[in-house]
Image (cartoon, rainbow, N blue to C red; front, side, top):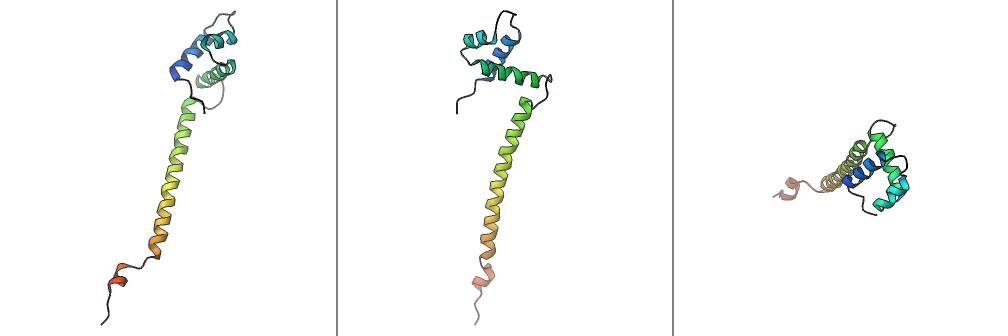
Length: 103
């Protein structure tokens, strides 16, 4: 998976694209920064969503959702370990039965 561009770089490219004059195209900006035109268009769409100009998931919401999914996955793994441990321990004989001797 390719490395994502740093946030500062993305923000700078979006700022330049939003503040460009009428003669400057997105393709020219993409060439100047050495990135694909579609990448800039995607960043501009996300900037509109983040600014509240268009409906959709904001960057903060996406980050929070990703973190919550990661946390859920971890908790499910922990629960599975506990379930298996409980099942294993329920099959073991209690200690008082192992130590009792009858004369």
